[in-house]
Each structure stands twice: as C-alpha cells, then as structure tokens.
Length: 370
Ligand SMILES: [Zn+2]
Image (cartoon, rainbow, N blue to C red; front, side, top):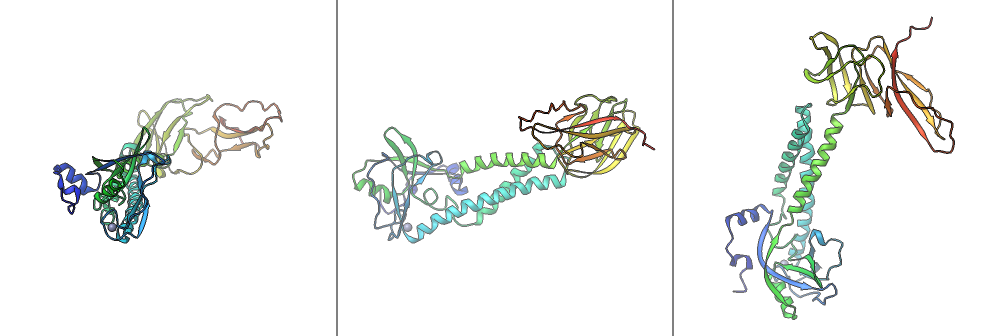
C-alpha cells in the first residue's frame, strides 16, 4: 500500500456508496480502530497536520458520536493545520446553517399548506412541512463545508464511537493519525469506518418537524364548541364544507355540544336543518380567545358564564357574565371548566389555596325588566 495515496481510493466502492458519499449523507472509509481506556496515555500533539500532513498549528479534541456525548472519554487530541482547522469550523457552521434552513423550510411548508388549503388535514400539513424542509436542505447544498467533501466527522479525522469493556472505541479516518498512534506502540487495527454525521440529525429533525407541525396545526385549527339547543339536529357548514351534524339538546344537559376544529381566520358559518332549510348564516373570526362557542338555532335561549371562587381565591367580579343573545358565536377570554352544569357550593373553606371555577350555563331568556 503506497503511503502517498489517500486510503479511500484503494478500495472499490459500489455506486450506492459513492452516491451517498456525494450526497453527504454517509461516507464509508476504510480506516482504523483503536481501543483506549479513559485514562489511556494517548499522544497529545504532533508537528504535522493529522489530516493533510502540512505544518500543524492547532489541535482539537477528537469528535464524539452522539451516544457518547456526556460520557467519560479518553483524551485524544488531533493536530490540524490552519486550513484544516478552519474547515472544521466551516463544517460546524454548515451543520447549524443547514439545520436552520431545514427548520425554516419546514415551518414555511406548513404555512403554505395552511394558506392555500386552510381546511386541510394534519397529514397534508406534515407532508408540506417535510417537503419544505427538504427544499431548505437543498438550499444549504451550496454552502461550503458539507460533509463528504472532506475527510472525517465534522472535518476531524478521529471520532470516539462507543464504549466497550475497559475503554472506548476510537475510529480513525486518517492514515497520518493512525501511523502516529502506531508509532507510540498503541495497537491499531484496520476497520471499516462509516462517517454518518447527518443521519441522526435528519431523523431527529423529521421528528421535531412532525411535533412542531402538530402544534402549528392545532394552533391554526382552534376548537369550537357547537351547541344546538333546537329540537332538530343541524348540519354545520364552514366555507361550504360540511363539518358536523350536531343533535339537538333543547334543555340544559351537562357537557352538551360537540367539539370541532375550524381553521383560524374569517369563516363563513352556516347552520342547516337536515331538510336543507338554512337556520342561520354568519361571518365570524375564529381563533381569538381561550374558548369559542357557536350556538346556531338559539333564539330565545340565553347563555352566561358563572364564576365562583374556592378556598382563598379572590371572589371574581362580576360573578355572572351574560353573553349577548343577539350573537350566536362567542369568543371567551377565560378558560371554562365545565359546560351546562352549576358550580358546586364553595363551602367557605379558607384552608385551601383554591381557585376560580367557571362554567357556561343556558336558560330561556327572561323578558327585560320594565
Ligand atoms: Zn491540514
């Protein structure tokens, strides 16, 4: 084996391996492995760069694989020339930049799906965010410093990969460094080394994107409680799309109503009887406040919020908030603890810290007092 040739050129790589290497996802290198204990006496510095052999100017610690982060590892310092040292920093900056592009692309993709199809399902938004994220990563393609262009993990030619009995395994992708360790009598064995520092990032990134998109989807599709106090069921239609059929519950029944999610923004709400007769139609803004309630077909019924303090909590004022009966869509700025049941007696127990409990009630409207 001639010394002047880089080690990876002495092996035949499959087309698949070459493609992955070109994409910067994963690079297979025939390198070396060292077993070293945590307190092993590894050579600290060298006169020439471990990556290219030029005059060394800096040294830095070996890279550490994700599963070894935070664990005790042997101290192995890699010597680097000016150029190779700068490259390790480019590689780190590239990781941060591509992560940022991927996140921005993911959120942008979810937003585009919501802007174009506000009523789209969660799955469509997740797909949009993954597509956006991939586009974002493609953008980071042209930033210099990507893995696969240069040797080593993050440009560092040695990485501590796993802990084994009596120490750790260190993978080495540089012949110079392997020779240097061998020169000090440390047993170095040849092995296949896989540089793969983008994969954990991609998997973690997709997981994070799905979570962020789920939160965004819930935020863009707030819950509205539809309460039908008529005798007959009504069909609720939002922007021409049938959303739910809500059975009629004329009397006050605990927990009555159906929770639906409606896309945030100005929406055309329409309630229809099953025979097609339109009960009412209104344009409302969905998405403000903590609770939203829509009660079509509720002429003659009055809704109110009752609040009661327990324990040492301050008595809320007013205790009853009447909801204007001429409107049938309400946005409440306070959280609601229960629907259509009275608050229990407070008991006047001052030993508990307590809190304020709020319920929504409904009843037949009383005629205005003269
Ligand atoms: Zn160098």
